[in-house]
Amino acid sequence: MHTVIVANAPAFRAEPFRDLLERADLVIAADGGGNALFAAALTPHLVIGDLDSLAPEAAAAFAAAGVTFLRYPIEKDETDLELALLAAAARQADTIDVLGAIGGRWDQGLSNVALLALPELAGRRVRLLDVDQEAYLARGETPIAGAVGDTISLLPLGGPARGVTTRGLYYALDDEELHFERSRGISNVIAWTPAAVVVREGMLLVVRVWRRETDQIWSR
Image (cartoon, rainbow, N blue to C red):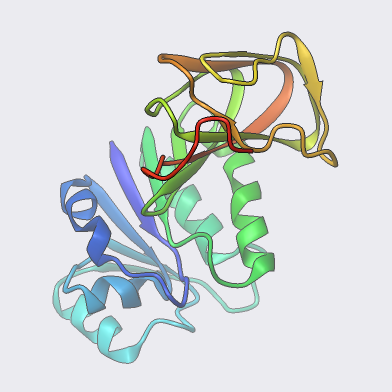
């Protein structure tokens, strides 16, 4: 089941993702993420969170449309996005796209990246998605989707990533180690497809930025 979650980012616009949202099996608004959906005349299936940032007019319209609300107290241990991810996993979503997760407060954005490592998401295809980039976790052997010229960055999370081997990337890695505090994995490039990365120990955040016509394949 394909689920799209819309997080609460102040400048996020849902319109560029209309096709993705309309094709999804389940659309979840993480509290104020519903405001962007309402502005685009889109309706989620589920609104979840403490509802402290969802506009009253959006809440009223969603309620009139029969949307399910799962309301939590403001004083809680999880962010609204974490609750949305857990709800998607509980509903057996195998593919989860998260919109609006980056671009607001730095603390929230960094926390949103870390949420990709939730144990409840293991075995599911989960990515943070923007109009020209995406981010997801790599453990073991992971294909890297994209076109020749796309920028790929490999960022260790939670400590060093060991035994990192790449295929199809311009700057090759062969059973090497990447460190959390070092920038070696930044700005690689897809040189041929299919591309992939293998991580023997640890995990990597894979960030792909779509290639622009002015990009140079060797830029770093």
